Image 1 (cartoon, one colour):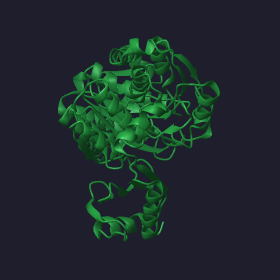
Image 2 (cartoon, rainbow, N blue to C red):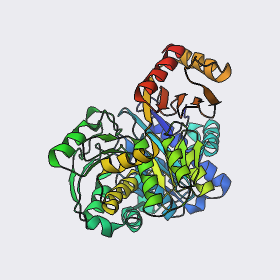
Image 3 (cartoon, rainbow, N blue to C red):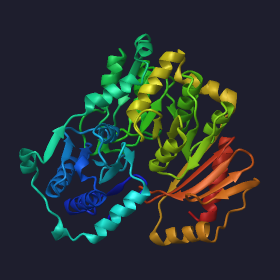
Image 4 (tube, one colour):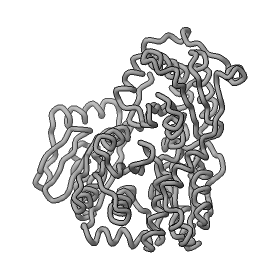
Amino acid sequence: MIKFGTGGWRAIIGDDFTKANVQLLTAALARKMKQEGVEGSGFVVGYDRRFLSLEAAQWACEVMAGEGIPCRLVNRDAPTPLIMFAVKYYDMAYGMAVTASHNPAIYNGIKVFVKGGRDADETVTADIEKYIAAIKPEEISVIPYDEALRSGKVEQINPQNAYLDSIIRGINMDAIRSRDLKIVLDPMYGVSKTSLQTILLTARCDVDVIHERHDTLFGGRLPAPNVETLGALRSYVMEHGCDIGIATDGDADRLGIIDDKGQFVHPNQILVILYYYLLKYKGWHGPAVRNIATTHLLDKVARAFGEQCYEVPVGFKYISAKMLETNAVIGGESSGGLTVRGHIQGKDGIYAASLLVEMLAVTGQKLSEIYENIIGEYGRLFMAERDYRFTHERKQEIMKLLMEEKKLPEFPYEIEKVSYLDGCKVYFKNDGWIIARFSGTEPLLRIFCEMPEKVTAEAVCDIMKEFLHL
């Protein structure tokens, strides 16, 4: 079964991620393009460093060639935001990236993009699933990759320079050049090194890189930049006196940051910091967009500047759509993905990192100082996060309890409202909230709680855990 989640289709290699399924998904997308009459715009495919990513990208090209749709393949492993940029740059109706993003190494997958370089929304992915169900494997026509390349049905491209130039044009490079910043990058064995290093070296930064080799096992760890996985980056920042440590996930659409004191800067904090910087220092105007499991401190900053913060379900496609609708300045999520107005309409860890470096140069402050100034002005909120694995039976029990029967534990705080937009989210009247929702990319139940005190956030998580018998 090919089912799209919040971040595309992801599956275990050799289980559901197979040549047959990649061909099936691509054939379905080709049929959809023909039905919509957009096959003439062509199609772009890119891939990351995961096992079978290159081969899967070529399998997709073979199907597109067999369907008579002009296909362009990015000719090197590439960041997902670069591939999204290529869809926009070449004015294509659709494109795809072969990646499982931050999932464990045994996974691979496909993200589908639509016109403008946006993530395909649930309407598009549901439509693709319908086409998949109607196709028989023997109906799929393919042209071998080398033959398709020789005949011109597939073209190899390298849009990297255009992508980098688009970022450089949006960054105050002169300000960065004046600061002589020392930066260390951790691509986590993924695909961000060339892009980030090129931008920062062009801005005359002193740049070191760790974990840069091609390793399909990601050094034996999860390619997700979080507090558990960035120990080596933290050590490097402290030992070498770096101004900032920047990490990106496997396909470089998310980032993780270590500040000048060696502290992990949570993605919630990054989102707040960048929004504050864009409003106060760059003089931008406009709302912010966050998903339902992301900090409400963003709302406080928005209100202080006379702006609004919109809440959407988890999945960056919802953030992109709401940003487009409201002309928002920034949109982001607590898992490390964000985007800024004027760039691609999707997550880009490379652009976000470049903007953070610009902020250090323009403000002349340390990253740790900037966040302390913000919480000194707006107050501090603490988030607790828990992940729990479950059986199919337990998932059904929890879904029934929370979503159908709408039962809640006895909380020691007055409840303002409850939302079932995505999972079950309880809003308290004391600036706090808790949400329990099932991940759309991994078999996990996730609980997030944000409160004015850390001990309180942990305690409320424990109440939900006990109530759900986890």
